[in-house]
Length: 350
Ligand SMILES: *[C@@H]1O[C@H](CO)[C@@H](O)[C@H](O)[C@H]1NC(C)=O
Ligand SMILES: *[C@@H]1O[C@H](CO)[C@@H](O)[C@H](O)[C@H]1NC(C)=O
Image (cartoon, rainbow, N blue to C red):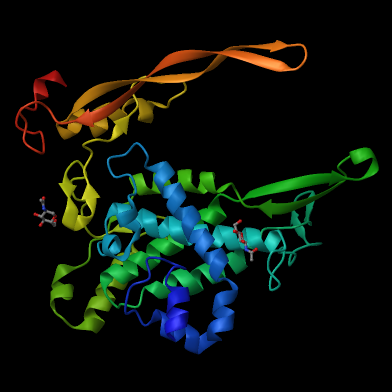
Protein backbone atom coordinates (compact mmCIF):
# COMPACT_ATOMS: atom_id res chain seq x y z
CA UNK A 1 0.00 0.00 0.00
CA UNK A 2 2.84 2.32 0.83
CA UNK A 3 4.41 1.53 -2.51
CA UNK A 4 1.21 2.36 -4.30
CA UNK A 5 0.67 5.58 -2.41
CA UNK A 6 4.11 6.64 -3.45
CA UNK A 7 3.14 6.02 -7.04
CA UNK A 8 -0.27 7.57 -6.87
CA UNK A 9 0.56 10.81 -5.14
CA UNK A 10 2.36 12.51 -8.01
CA UNK A 11 -0.33 11.53 -10.50
CA UNK A 12 -2.59 14.32 -9.55
CA UNK A 13 -0.54 16.33 -7.27
CA UNK A 14 -3.49 18.06 -5.75
CA UNK A 15 -4.72 14.80 -4.30
CA UNK A 16 -6.01 15.67 -0.89
CA UNK A 17 -4.08 13.90 1.83
CA UNK A 18 -6.28 11.46 3.65
CA UNK A 19 -8.95 11.44 1.00
CA UNK A 20 -10.81 8.20 0.64
CA UNK A 21 -10.28 8.47 -3.06
CA UNK A 22 -7.17 6.34 -3.44
CA UNK A 23 -8.62 3.48 -1.43
CA UNK A 24 -12.02 3.51 -3.12
CA UNK A 25 -10.50 3.57 -6.58
CA UNK A 26 -8.30 0.62 -5.81
CA UNK A 27 -11.24 -1.35 -4.48
CA UNK A 28 -13.42 -0.66 -7.48
CA UNK A 29 -11.02 -1.11 -10.32
CA UNK A 30 -7.82 -2.58 -8.93
CA UNK A 31 -4.38 -1.04 -9.18
CA UNK A 32 -3.74 -2.28 -12.73
CA UNK A 33 -6.80 -0.57 -14.18
CA UNK A 34 -5.94 2.51 -12.24
CA UNK A 35 -2.34 2.68 -13.37
CA UNK A 36 -3.25 2.07 -17.00
CA UNK A 37 -4.21 5.70 -17.56
CA UNK A 38 -2.20 7.22 -14.74
CA UNK A 39 0.53 8.74 -16.87
CA UNK A 40 -1.86 10.14 -19.44
CA UNK A 41 -4.04 11.61 -16.69
CA UNK A 42 -0.99 13.22 -15.13
CA UNK A 43 0.00 14.69 -18.49
CA UNK A 44 -3.54 16.00 -18.87
CA UNK A 45 -3.52 17.76 -15.50
CA UNK A 46 -0.12 19.18 -16.31
CA UNK A 47 -1.28 20.58 -19.63
CA UNK A 48 -4.09 22.26 -17.72
CA UNK A 49 -1.67 23.87 -15.28
CA UNK A 50 0.62 25.07 -18.11
CA UNK A 51 -2.36 26.56 -19.93
CA UNK A 52 -3.54 28.25 -16.72
CA UNK A 53 -0.14 29.93 -16.34
CA UNK A 54 -0.24 31.07 -19.97
CA UNK A 55 -3.75 32.49 -19.73
CA UNK A 56 -3.03 34.42 -16.54
CA UNK A 57 0.55 35.51 -17.28
CA UNK A 58 -0.44 39.21 -17.23
CA UNK A 59 -3.12 39.06 -14.56
CA UNK A 60 -2.63 39.96 -10.91
CA UNK A 61 -3.33 36.34 -10.06
CA UNK A 62 -0.97 34.42 -12.33
CA UNK A 63 -1.90 30.84 -11.49
CA UNK A 64 0.93 30.30 -8.99
CA UNK A 65 1.89 26.74 -8.14
CA UNK A 66 0.29 27.20 -4.73
CA UNK A 67 -3.06 27.59 -6.52
CA UNK A 68 -2.98 24.05 -7.87
CA UNK A 69 -2.02 22.42 -4.59
CA UNK A 70 -4.57 21.20 -2.03
CA UNK A 71 -4.09 24.27 0.15
CA UNK A 72 -4.76 26.65 -2.71
CA UNK A 73 -7.91 24.79 -3.68
CA UNK A 74 -9.50 24.99 -0.25
CA UNK A 75 -11.47 28.03 -1.28
CA UNK A 76 -14.00 28.31 -4.04
CA UNK A 77 -13.12 31.57 -5.74
CA UNK A 78 -13.42 32.63 -9.37
CA UNK A 79 -9.80 31.56 -9.82
CA UNK A 80 -10.11 28.09 -8.30
CA UNK A 81 -13.11 27.56 -10.59
CA UNK A 82 -10.76 28.06 -13.53
CA UNK A 83 -8.16 25.66 -12.09
CA UNK A 84 -10.80 22.95 -11.74
CA UNK A 85 -12.24 23.49 -15.21
CA UNK A 86 -8.91 23.57 -17.02
CA UNK A 87 -7.65 20.46 -15.18
CA UNK A 88 -10.76 18.45 -16.02
CA UNK A 89 -10.58 19.70 -19.61
CA UNK A 90 -6.87 18.87 -19.82
CA UNK A 91 -7.44 15.26 -18.80
CA UNK A 92 -10.37 14.87 -21.20
CA UNK A 93 -8.48 16.48 -24.08
CA UNK A 94 -5.32 14.42 -23.54
CA UNK A 95 -7.17 11.11 -23.22
CA UNK A 96 -9.34 11.79 -26.26
CA UNK A 97 -6.23 12.60 -28.28
CA UNK A 98 -4.52 9.47 -26.94
CA UNK A 99 -7.45 7.49 -28.38
CA UNK A 100 -7.20 9.06 -31.84
CA UNK A 101 -3.44 8.54 -31.95
CA UNK A 102 -3.80 4.89 -31.04
CA UNK A 103 -1.84 5.27 -27.80
CA UNK A 104 -4.27 3.16 -25.80
CA UNK A 105 -5.50 -0.39 -26.33
CA UNK A 106 -8.92 0.31 -24.91
CA UNK A 107 -10.02 3.09 -27.23
CA UNK A 108 -9.67 4.45 -30.72
CA UNK A 109 -11.46 6.93 -32.93
CA UNK A 110 -15.17 7.39 -32.43
CA UNK A 111 -16.63 5.65 -35.47
CA UNK A 112 -20.07 5.00 -33.95
CA UNK A 113 -21.86 7.31 -36.38
CA UNK A 114 -19.85 6.49 -39.49
CA UNK A 115 -22.03 5.86 -42.53
CA UNK A 116 -24.99 7.72 -41.04
CA UNK A 117 -26.33 10.96 -42.46
CA UNK A 118 -24.98 13.88 -40.47
CA UNK A 119 -26.74 16.74 -42.23
CA UNK A 120 -27.77 17.98 -45.65
CA UNK A 121 -25.23 16.67 -48.13
CA UNK A 122 -22.85 14.91 -45.77
CA UNK A 123 -22.24 11.60 -44.03
CA UNK A 124 -20.27 10.79 -40.91
CA UNK A 125 -16.95 9.17 -41.72
CA UNK A 126 -13.30 9.14 -40.74
CA UNK A 127 -11.76 9.43 -37.31
CA UNK A 128 -13.91 11.46 -34.95
CA UNK A 129 -12.49 12.54 -31.60
CA UNK A 130 -13.42 10.10 -28.87
CA UNK A 131 -14.63 12.70 -26.40
CA UNK A 132 -16.86 10.20 -24.61
CA UNK A 133 -13.85 8.16 -23.54
CA UNK A 134 -11.93 11.29 -22.50
CA UNK A 135 -14.93 12.48 -20.55
CA UNK A 136 -15.34 9.15 -18.79
CA UNK A 137 -11.70 9.02 -17.65
CA UNK A 138 -11.72 12.68 -16.62
CA UNK A 139 -14.82 12.08 -14.50
CA UNK A 140 -13.35 8.94 -12.99
CA UNK A 141 -10.06 10.52 -11.96
CA UNK A 142 -10.67 14.24 -11.49
CA UNK A 143 -14.18 14.14 -10.03
CA UNK A 144 -13.28 11.46 -7.52
CA UNK A 145 -11.19 14.11 -5.73
CA UNK A 146 -14.41 15.61 -4.45
CA UNK A 147 -15.53 13.38 -1.65
CA UNK A 148 -17.29 16.00 0.44
CA UNK A 149 -21.01 16.73 0.62
CA UNK A 150 -20.45 20.43 1.14
CA UNK A 151 -21.25 23.30 -1.23
CA UNK A 152 -17.60 23.59 -2.20
CA UNK A 153 -17.47 20.00 -3.49
CA UNK A 154 -20.68 20.58 -5.46
CA UNK A 155 -19.25 23.77 -6.97
CA UNK A 156 -15.98 22.05 -7.87
CA UNK A 157 -17.86 19.23 -9.61
CA UNK A 158 -19.93 21.75 -11.54
CA UNK A 159 -16.76 23.54 -12.69
CA UNK A 160 -15.07 20.25 -13.67
CA UNK A 161 -18.09 19.47 -15.84
CA UNK A 162 -18.04 22.99 -17.32
CA UNK A 163 -14.39 22.41 -18.26
CA UNK A 164 -15.31 19.21 -20.06
CA UNK A 165 -18.15 20.96 -21.87
CA UNK A 166 -15.58 23.50 -23.10
CA UNK A 167 -13.75 20.66 -24.86
CA UNK A 168 -16.99 19.74 -26.65
CA UNK A 169 -18.00 23.33 -27.39
CA UNK A 170 -14.71 24.06 -29.15
CA UNK A 171 -14.71 20.92 -31.33
CA UNK A 172 -14.66 21.44 -35.05
CA UNK A 173 -16.17 19.54 -37.93
CA UNK A 174 -13.77 18.72 -40.73
CA UNK A 175 -15.07 17.52 -44.08
CA UNK A 176 -13.63 15.94 -47.17
CA UNK A 177 -15.13 15.81 -50.63
CA UNK A 178 -15.49 12.64 -52.65
CA UNK A 179 -17.02 11.79 -56.00
CA UNK A 180 -15.95 12.23 -59.60
CA UNK A 181 -12.86 14.48 -59.65
CA UNK A 182 -13.63 15.73 -56.15
CA UNK A 183 -17.00 17.03 -57.30
CA UNK A 184 -18.18 16.83 -53.74
CA UNK A 185 -21.24 14.80 -54.67
CA UNK A 186 -20.44 12.90 -51.50
CA UNK A 187 -18.99 14.59 -48.45
CA UNK A 188 -17.82 12.86 -45.29
CA UNK A 189 -17.18 14.67 -42.05
CA UNK A 190 -15.68 13.95 -38.65
CA UNK A 191 -15.13 15.90 -35.46
CA UNK A 192 -11.73 17.10 -34.35
CA UNK A 193 -10.56 18.48 -31.02
CA UNK A 194 -9.41 22.08 -30.96
CA UNK A 195 -5.90 22.93 -29.88
CA UNK A 196 -5.81 23.09 -26.13
CA UNK A 197 -4.95 26.80 -26.41
CA UNK A 198 -8.39 27.45 -27.85
CA UNK A 199 -10.00 25.67 -24.90
CA UNK A 200 -7.89 27.84 -22.60
CA UNK A 201 -9.07 30.99 -24.39
CA UNK A 202 -12.67 29.82 -24.14
CA UNK A 203 -12.40 29.11 -20.41
CA UNK A 204 -10.63 32.42 -19.76
CA UNK A 205 -13.75 34.16 -21.05
CA UNK A 206 -15.90 31.91 -18.85
CA UNK A 207 -13.68 32.95 -15.92
CA UNK A 208 -14.37 36.62 -16.57
CA UNK A 209 -18.12 35.87 -16.71
CA UNK A 210 -18.15 33.52 -13.71
CA UNK A 211 -21.18 33.80 -11.47
CA UNK A 212 -21.32 33.82 -7.72
CA UNK A 213 -23.58 31.10 -6.45
CA UNK A 214 -26.19 32.35 -4.04
CA UNK A 215 -27.05 29.60 -1.66
CA UNK A 216 -29.91 30.20 0.69
CA UNK A 217 -27.99 30.94 3.89
CA UNK A 218 -30.97 30.10 6.10
CA UNK A 219 -30.98 26.55 4.83
CA UNK A 220 -27.22 26.22 5.15
CA UNK A 221 -27.26 27.36 8.74
CA UNK A 222 -30.03 24.94 9.62
CA UNK A 223 -27.29 22.32 9.86
CA UNK A 224 -29.51 19.67 8.37
CA UNK A 225 -27.44 18.10 5.62
CA UNK A 226 -30.47 17.02 3.57
CA UNK A 227 -31.86 20.56 3.67
CA UNK A 228 -28.49 22.10 2.79
CA UNK A 229 -28.01 19.63 -0.06
CA UNK A 230 -31.39 20.74 -1.31
CA UNK A 231 -30.30 24.38 -1.13
CA UNK A 232 -27.16 23.59 -3.18
CA UNK A 233 -29.09 21.67 -5.80
CA UNK A 234 -31.60 24.53 -6.07
CA UNK A 235 -28.85 27.11 -6.48
CA UNK A 236 -26.95 25.02 -9.06
CA UNK A 237 -30.14 24.48 -11.00
CA UNK A 238 -30.29 28.17 -11.82
CA UNK A 239 -26.87 28.21 -13.50
CA UNK A 240 -26.17 27.00 -17.04
CA UNK A 241 -23.92 23.95 -17.09
CA UNK A 242 -21.37 25.73 -19.28
CA UNK A 243 -20.75 28.58 -16.83
CA UNK A 244 -18.11 28.73 -14.12
CA UNK A 245 -19.31 29.42 -10.61
CA UNK A 246 -17.73 30.38 -7.30
CA UNK A 247 -18.74 30.83 -3.68
CA UNK A 248 -16.31 33.38 -2.27
CA UNK A 249 -15.00 36.70 -3.49
CA UNK A 250 -11.35 36.63 -4.51
CA UNK A 251 -8.80 38.04 -2.08
CA UNK A 252 -6.82 41.15 -3.07
CA UNK A 253 -4.21 39.71 -5.42
CA UNK A 254 -2.16 42.92 -5.25
CA UNK A 255 -1.18 42.00 -1.73
CA UNK A 256 1.15 39.38 -0.52
CA UNK A 257 -0.52 36.90 1.83
CA UNK A 258 1.67 33.94 2.65
CA UNK A 259 -1.01 32.04 4.52
CA UNK A 260 -3.10 32.10 1.31
CA UNK A 261 -0.08 31.24 -0.84
CA UNK A 262 -0.25 34.59 -2.62
CA UNK A 263 2.85 36.54 -3.56
CA UNK A 264 1.34 39.89 -4.50
CA UNK A 265 2.40 41.79 -7.59
CA UNK A 266 5.56 43.40 -6.21
CA UNK A 267 8.48 42.33 -8.38
CA UNK A 268 6.28 41.14 -11.24
CA UNK A 269 7.30 41.97 -14.78
CA UNK A 270 4.87 43.82 -17.01
CA UNK A 271 4.63 44.77 -20.67
CA UNK A 272 4.89 48.45 -21.57
CA UNK A 273 4.89 48.90 -25.30
CA UNK A 274 5.99 45.84 -27.12
CA UNK A 275 5.37 45.20 -30.75
CA UNK A 276 2.65 42.69 -31.37
CA UNK A 277 1.36 42.82 -27.82
CA UNK A 278 -2.33 42.74 -27.12
CA UNK A 279 -4.19 45.54 -25.40
CA UNK A 280 -4.50 43.32 -22.32
CA UNK A 281 -0.71 42.94 -22.23
CA UNK A 282 -0.05 46.64 -22.85
CA UNK A 283 -2.21 47.53 -19.88
CA UNK A 284 -0.41 45.09 -17.61
CA UNK A 285 1.85 47.73 -15.99
CA UNK A 286 -1.16 49.72 -14.93
CA UNK A 287 -3.00 46.64 -13.73
CA UNK A 288 -0.13 44.96 -11.90
CA UNK A 289 1.84 47.97 -10.65
CA UNK A 290 0.04 51.30 -10.61
CA UNK A 291 -3.43 50.08 -9.68
CA UNK A 292 -1.81 48.06 -6.90
CA UNK A 293 -0.04 51.11 -5.47
CA UNK A 294 3.32 50.20 -6.95
CA UNK A 295 5.64 52.06 -9.28
CA UNK A 296 6.83 50.85 -12.69
CA UNK A 297 10.57 50.54 -12.85
CA UNK A 298 12.47 50.40 -16.09
CA UNK A 299 15.27 47.87 -16.07
CA UNK A 300 17.91 47.98 -18.77
CA UNK A 301 20.21 45.10 -19.33
CA UNK A 302 22.84 44.70 -21.96
CA UNK A 303 22.70 41.51 -23.94
CA UNK A 304 25.64 40.55 -26.13
CA UNK A 305 24.97 38.41 -29.14
CA UNK A 306 26.50 37.56 -32.51
CA UNK A 307 25.79 39.89 -35.37
CA UNK A 308 26.99 41.03 -38.80
CA UNK A 309 28.04 37.49 -39.58
CA UNK A 310 29.94 37.01 -42.81
CA UNK A 311 30.42 33.78 -44.61
CA UNK A 312 33.91 33.19 -46.05
CA UNK A 313 34.51 30.63 -48.79
CA UNK A 314 35.10 27.96 -47.59
CA UNK A 315 33.99 27.38 -44.77
CA UNK A 316 34.12 29.83 -41.94
CA UNK A 317 31.69 32.33 -40.50
CA UNK A 318 32.99 35.46 -38.81
CA UNK A 319 30.72 37.42 -36.55
CA UNK A 320 30.98 40.51 -34.44
CA UNK A 321 29.73 40.85 -30.91
CA UNK A 322 26.93 43.33 -30.70
CA UNK A 323 25.58 44.71 -27.50
CA UNK A 324 21.88 45.29 -27.40
CA UNK A 325 19.97 46.96 -24.63
CA UNK A 326 16.94 45.04 -23.46
CA UNK A 327 14.38 47.08 -21.59
CA UNK A 328 12.09 45.38 -19.12
CA UNK A 329 9.56 46.75 -16.71
CA UNK A 330 8.73 45.57 -13.23
CA UNK A 331 6.55 46.62 -10.31
CA UNK A 332 8.44 48.05 -7.35
CA UNK A 333 7.48 49.69 -4.11
CA UNK A 334 7.11 53.44 -4.12
CA UNK A 335 9.64 55.43 -2.12
CA UNK A 336 8.51 55.76 1.43
CA UNK A 337 5.43 53.63 0.95
CA UNK A 338 4.51 50.83 3.29
CA UNK A 339 4.69 47.26 2.11
CA UNK A 340 1.42 47.64 0.25
CA UNK A 341 2.36 50.98 -1.23
CA UNK A 342 -1.00 52.51 -0.57
CA UNK A 343 0.11 55.42 1.59
CA UNK A 344 1.35 57.70 -1.13
CA UNK A 345 -0.89 56.45 -3.82
CA UNK A 346 -1.85 59.36 -5.98
CA UNK A 347 -5.29 58.71 -7.37
CA UNK A 348 -5.38 62.03 -9.19
CA UNK A 349 -2.71 60.81 -11.59
CA UNK A 350 -4.90 58.07 -13.00
C1 LIG B 1 -1.19 10.38 -24.01
O1 LIG B 1 -0.83 11.67 -24.48
C2 LIG B 1 0.10 12.35 -23.67
C3 LIG B 1 0.26 13.75 -24.19
O2 LIG B 1 0.40 13.81 -25.55
C4 LIG B 1 1.41 11.57 -23.66
O3 LIG B 1 2.35 12.21 -22.86
C5 LIG B 1 1.12 10.17 -23.12
O4 LIG B 1 2.30 9.41 -23.14
C6 LIG B 1 0.03 9.49 -23.94
N1 LIG B 1 -0.31 8.20 -23.33
C7 LIG B 1 0.11 7.05 -23.81
C8 LIG B 1 -0.31 5.83 -23.05
O5 LIG B 1 0.80 6.95 -24.80
C1 LIG C 1 -4.41 36.81 4.68
O1 LIG C 1 -5.70 36.35 4.38
C2 LIG C 1 -6.43 35.93 5.49
C3 LIG C 1 -7.73 35.31 5.01
O2 LIG C 1 -8.41 36.18 4.14
C4 LIG C 1 -6.67 37.13 6.43
O3 LIG C 1 -7.39 36.73 7.54
C5 LIG C 1 -5.32 37.69 6.82
O4 LIG C 1 -5.52 38.86 7.60
C6 LIG C 1 -4.49 38.04 5.61
N1 LIG C 1 -3.14 38.41 6.01
C7 LIG C 1 -2.56 39.53 5.57
C8 LIG C 1 -1.16 39.75 6.02
O5 LIG C 1 -3.12 40.30 4.81
